[in-house]
Length: 545
Image 1 (spheres, helix red, strand yellow):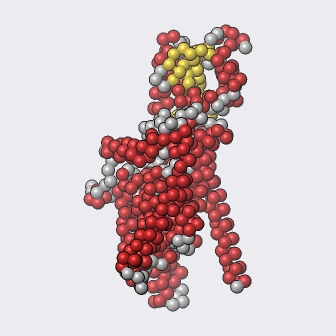
Image 2 (cartoon, rainbow, N blue to C red; image 1 turned 60 degrees about the horizontal axis):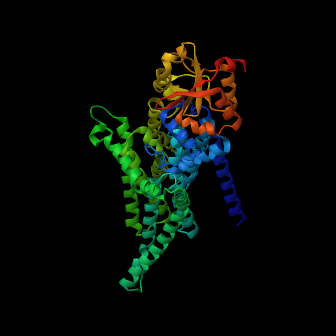
């Protein structure tokens, strides 16, 4: 008994060390090689909408196009409320998410395979992370997968409760993931109750009634938990008078808008013929591979069920992972790109690792039966491992060499598209010039070439410079922090300050003394569709002060 306890203790300790190592390695990678420094339009939308919530705006009410479910904006707004609106805060939140994704991937993989093989999907996730501001998508896929696996491992009530609460909370962030998890759990509940229909000593009618009674009882409890976990946000919207809009967007509006956008895109899932004609299209190969993976593993499950006439614990774990992954893959099916595939990467890498584990186990078993205690066995095992890793290796190389899996690699391939900076904020050249010209063009006739502009942008940044230089030379963006902003306003003494309408909500969070000081120094001169432009009230007086 003591030996068993000691062995289990060692396993737990070893698993803890591996988990800590995964978090540490992921943290180092995301603060170095995969560090985010390019501010693009999508991140700009994310932070400005979160900042707008601090001013009282509501997702799906005050802003709708290209909007996720409210949860992610509310979470970011809450973090901003604690630490103040900042790109640094927002980006570090994604770093934390990425570290947790690597850890959760490893934990989920351990349900299906030994620890040595479970490291494979965790390594793949760390090497090929999804777009940083979409980390919450992978995060909630894994949270629901872990809860599902815990539930089907023994069908205990406590895990059903946690899974239901997890799905309800996920609806705050991604209603589609919540739906996929709920469907998977519902199928597991029904399949788990199927043996009731074969019970002996009961009439067919009695067995059928008992089957539906148990199924609906369990599914009803699950549904109540989902509703209970989702209800706080419904109540919040109801208090604000917009519960209908939330429920409409959640059930119809958001999906309708998304499918309409996909219908307008020229991108569609490649046919099997497009993989090889006129040459090998690796993007098509990679988005087709998960479908073949799903079909193969469903065949494996069907074979096991036909052989044993029942699901083992391991089969339940595989079924839940496979079913959930297949449903969630719709996201990549509708938008078949390599980058979108990585958003579904964690669960696909887990199944991928499971197939590698099955093939390796079968190969080594055959090896042992034919060559007992042969010195060639270690060599043959090594060859098998190398062979199994050729395709994953090419998948990783292709992504790292050709796709936008990190800002450093993106910049290395498209240097001319970005404005470099000594700060950790690099801007896209075309977008930034357009915004600068919008401000300068509005009041160009009433300004001099030497007049200084300070532009507060919607991405929680600002930059400044002379009119003649800003339109042609690089600008140096800075984080929107009160101390730095006040110092630059007093030191640079800009004649014009342009504030993006969305950035106004961020400025509300600045101190009252700053707002009073700014109102004394500047007055509204004019506005564009995007900016309000302020001019110094008395430049000579301000200069003396």
